[in-house]
Image 1 (cartoon, helix red, strand yellow):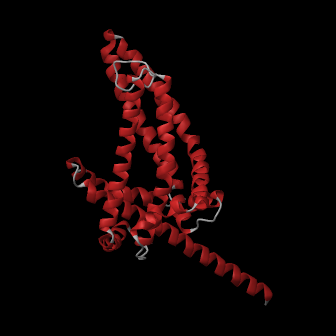
Image 2 (cartoon, rainbow, N blue to C red; image 1 turned 180 degrees about the horizontal axis):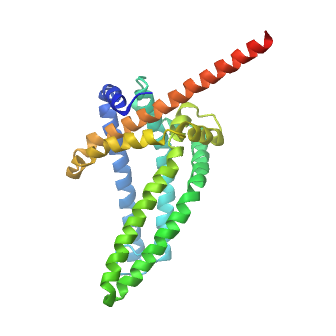
Image 3 (cartoon, one colour; image 1 turned 180 degrees about the vertical axis):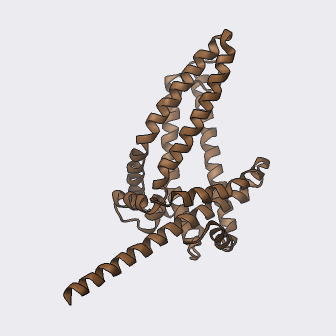
Length: 282
């Protein structure tokens, strides 16, 4: 398995072959999110102006039931539209990392089949249920923290207490966020495995991802930390166009290394089993 330095060196030549396509993926993603947010704002404004939703000092009043329903519907719609695209993008990138030049339109390939879309949504639903084991308790802790902070803020005589509580809450939130990333990292290979074996059942893909990542979480963390320095130029906004494709290709390369390493282990195990059978036969 390649070291992180070797991985980055091997990914750059492949990225040079598809840099334009990766930049296009970035703009499509950003444009889709921008359009969704704009549609949400326009819908909320329309409901407020026409009197279907209550008037508030805030432009978007999430305490209003109708606005909340529109927000929930918008999130579900974004999930339905973006999920097949994200899987198509992962298929495209892992093919590029493996040295297979494929057409850029393959990022939309998952929309061409209702069967494939059904498989993706079923896999994502199972995966979401696995992640909720950690997400729900974490969300409950964060919600309780926000509630307590709001209570402290209302008491002007305890500003020092509020400041200390705010710092503690940020530290706890950061710890929970990091723990959630590490906990969910064992599912990192699932979408890439689906791209390579789309007809396998969700349980098989999830179990295989957990097996692949087990013992190699530090490899992924080291890869991500090695890319952290590139976040500094992102402050200028424009470099994001070029840095994000590099991030994603290196990350895809890291997952690919783990998948290939697992394949070699499987072949070695199969060879050992065949040797045992031959020895038993003799």
